[in-house]
Length: 353
Length: 174
Image (cartoon, rainbow over all chains, first blue to last red; front, side, top):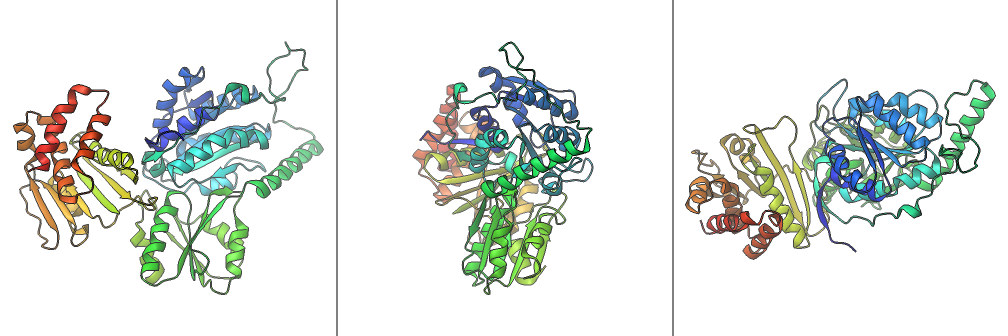
């Protein structure tokens, strides 16, 4: 095992992407994720890759579209307002069945909002921020190490399912420093260019076409059915969730990303005070670990669920769908870039405010 | 577990001070998080960071009740002093803060960091002096661990190692 390094989340994610095979990065600066393009600007040329600071987010995502179509492992990163600008391109990439990795270090909105941490882009990430029936594989890592491990494997997943993988972080995940163990650099020979990639006809292969325009209704419907069969397979194979002190819990706190770490401390505070609390932490936000909530809701010991988010309440809707009325689902959130403490959540659990 | 909030003006070395503690924790095989305030901070603005050191993986990197507050300027002292755990520690940079801590249930160390840094010939090392005073007060790591950490972190700029070690030791024995 290699030596641990103290790294900022943004930098560690960039290095993990490079080690996972990323050779094409296109982006446009925005706080709080600027360390990613900054890192890529010197790191990618070192490994024979390409870094381009585009003239806009719209341009950057379309560069990703092009590079992905040619079979290159491509990535972009941004923060909320910038990711909104990328939505048209993301929809096209999904329609063209192309793989890529997109990082969103979420900041408060709507509009230009603020620059402090938020989780208010959950709906956009998991319900389809662009037009049309599509899904992405969306992860909400809680630690820098978990982000590194997920990003390292993200290009494989994106190619396997032929869709964008999104990492939904927040300003804290981008800015925090933690000790990480970095994975080995993937050998270029281990990464195969997909057979559908537009690499030219010089090999004698037929012409390939990358497209998201399907004028014939039957053809488009067939594509959508294919995509949804793929999403179903992805849900079977890729759903990830962590449960903490849930087995005898009466109060289930649920949160994702860095907020789940704060909530984990809350569980320990409450347990020390004699409250039987536990935590369910989705690691994949799409596919959502509904079965875990269903199972918890069925338990007689479980009295209620409390969803905690840095938003006005988004993931709570998926929790309610999964719990399906079997137990009360309450919500505690902060917004605008304000971050709750473990003690704030504990107060909400015990006093309801 | 040790939860530390370090706060001051941007440019005072607040974030670097926290990073030195974080590096030392990592070298010692501890789990650690370093979470900075970020955004419109700039030289002369306010800056702070939260550092959590633990034997097990750190859950919350956000600190409501620190074990120690390191206040490099007056607004930082007033913003955070009431949050410190009873029995906790407050390190006050008395070069810039004439106020006294009003609480009697915390251990307070007043460190004239600028004067001490000047006395060892390194005017820019006030934050390293404070680090020395903090390590002495908390006993978080042996002084040798911090000296080795200074060597590693400044390895790319070796000419700064001796003066920073001097500043650390001066703060440690202040």
